[in-house]
Each structure stands twice: as C-alpha cells, then as structure tokens.
Image (cartoon, rainbow, N blue to C red):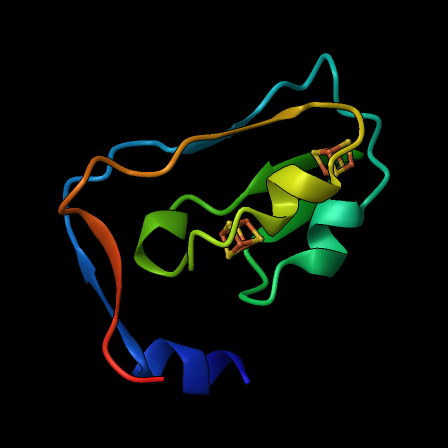
Length: 89
Ligand code: SF4
Ligand code: SF4
C-alpha cells in the first residue's frame, strides 16, 4: 500500500517543517505510529519522533494530529504551492 501511494503522488519542495512533536506533552501512547499509513513515526528509547525526511513522503492527511489526544503533535499544512500533489485518484 505504501509503495502504491508513493507512486500516485509527487512532492514540491519548500514545505519547511510542518509537523513537530512536543516531547513534554507526548505520553508515548503510540497512536501516531499506528495511524500513519506512510509509516513515518518511530519509537526509540521511549521517545516518539517523526522520521527526518517525512516531508518527502507525508500525505498531509493530518491523521497523526487528529489521533494525538495529548495535543503533542503540531501540524500545519505546508505553504501553498508546496508539498504533496495527488496526480491520480
Ligand atoms: S499520538 Fe501524540 S501522545 Fe501519542 S505517541 Fe504520538 S505524539 Fe505521543
Ligand atoms: S499527516 Fe498523515 S501521512 Fe503525514 S505523518 Fe501524519 S499520519 Fe502520516
């Protein structure tokens, strides 16, 4: 599924960082790891983080933001004209 989605989209550079985690708010529930269809979230040494190159794969679905009940995920859609472009479907 992940590969198929990548093939249906392209990315326009220049988004900057549009997702970040407040480690003081994160309770390490793991919801973001489960919900992200692109598998961009990681847990290591009891710390949750998003992969460094998430901008090149993120679908900007905001699901991670929606499921984070702790309010630890900051999400803003990238500046207009940058980010994901759905070419098909
Ligand atoms: S959903 Fe939010 S609180 Fe839960 S692990 Fe992810 S960032 Fe942390
Ligand atoms: S916005 Fe969607 S694709 Fe991007 S990191 Fe969050 S859940 Fe994953």
